[in-house]
Image 1: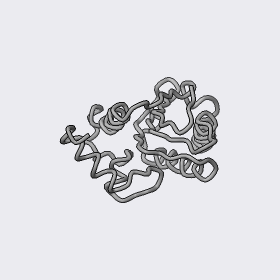
Image 2: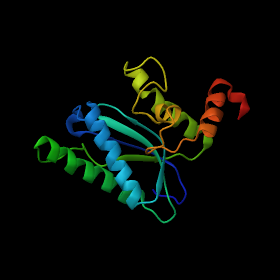
Image 3: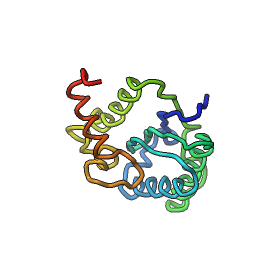
Amino acid sequence: MLRADARYHVTARANRKEMILESEQIKELFLEVVERCKKKYDFRIENFCIMGNHFHLIIRPGKGENLSAIMRWILGVFAMAYNRRNGLTGHVWGGRFYSQILASLREYLRIFDYIDSNPVRAGLVDGQGQWRYCGLWHARAGIGRICEITPDWLSRFLSFRTNPTLA
């Protein structure tokens, strides 16, 4: 189901759950593909996390844009670049991406937190915002590469997480 002006939680996993996204070079390749896609399509990434065999995005397509077209481009271009770089052929992704509309602020904040907690739950870092391939790390480092978390929004979000009665 697609809805105008909606925010979506999108995730996709590598074929056979292989750890294709494990190296920094391949994570950088994924970020480059998303940057290229942002020049072709109008959308915002409001949070992201790249793990070893999957990724998460909070994505908001622009007016008149189609989430499926955006994701088809990202997944397809990444697969071609990954296969070319590694001398491979065939499927890179385990299937079509999964998406869910974030219908409320509560749901948005829950998924935002879930995305930032992914590398903590996996034991890769001790706390949220420490994983270099997450939106929160990029926001704290002042990198507006693909993620559009503003410092002002970030400070309000972090205040909310420590004091939910502010909502």
